[in-house]
Image 1 (cartoon, rainbow, N blue to C red):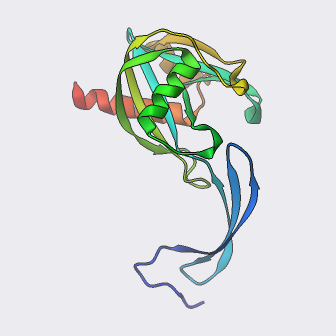
Image 2: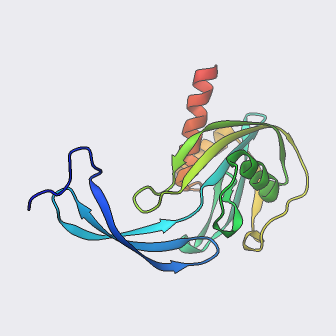
Length: 189
C-alpha cells in the first residue's frame, strides 16, 4: 500500500471520531484512523481531565490513602491523587492542594512540582502532575461520596518501599511519582 503521509506527518491521523460513552468522570470515543502505510483502523480513546498526585512527606515517610478499587476488586495504598469534578480542567497546583486536603485533611505549607506523567498513554491523554508537599498541617477531610471507605495513614520510607515490593502498593502512578521524587532528591542533595 502506498503511504498518503509526508515524512513530517504524525504516524496515525484521525479521519473521524464518534462519542461512544460519557459520564461525569470520563468519555470514551472511537476514532477511525489512517496509518503511515495508508492502512485504516479504529482507535479507542478514554478522555479524562488531567490529574494531580501529591507526595506528602514528613519524618522520612509518606502519607498514603487506600480505598476499595472496584475494577481490581481490592484495596491498595497509593499517594493521594485525583482530578477536578465534572471533567473540567484547572490549575494543577490548586488541584493538588484540594486533593491533599480532601483525602487526608492535610494542608501543605510548601508544594513543589516534580514533573508530569501520562497515566495510560496507550489509551488516554490524561496527564498527572506530581507534587511534593511539605510543612504539613492537619485538618479535616472533605471526601467525595466515592471515597467514603478511604483510609489515610503515614508510613516510614523503608516500609513504603517494602510495600511496593510485596504488592501492597500497585498503583503505577504512585511508583512512577516516587521515581520523580528520588530524582528530585538526587538533584537537590
